[in-house]
Length: 114
Length: 116
Image (cartoon, rainbow over all chains, first blue to last red; front, side, top):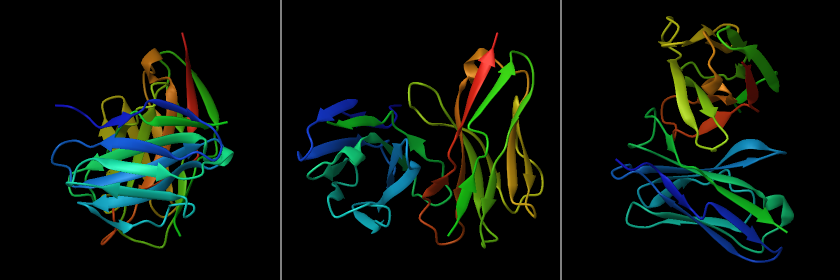
């Protein structure tokens, strides 16, 4: 079956612009996670969804970052007024119900803010 | 807060040889899981092996095995008979216990080079 997909694969934007990153999880996976991978901060958790709700948003670095999930499936991570420090690879993962279940990762979106 | 530390930014191994990647972690929880993930240049994170903290027996998956020392909070990965396809960045990760959301806490990663 299909794995986790993310789009776009790469995104180059200018400082101050808004960007939207998309994640399509594996069908039937109720848990969805966003992570950010950057040179300075390593791999860090951003937000967790269970269904359409986000019980853990503790990793979002600022109020410029937001995410939503609709229909218990697709999720969008939005970064407003992008800054150069937002440049990173954004990884999405999904798992069946979360908890101890294995997380399957997508290929990530590489965001470059000029 | 839980932390994961990988003290080896880079490692290299000769093809067919054995290499061990180190990982230490800090937690006050008694129930947790530990993982090793592989990230090749394609960026796709792949689960290599997992270890439940309550299990004393070290996990093994074909050429991959771990040395889990719970008291020392150490979780090293041994790759036997290294292959060129093992070249990648390896991440050690922690997942907390009961009631947790399942979010992973990662170490800084170790880049493994395999020499032919």
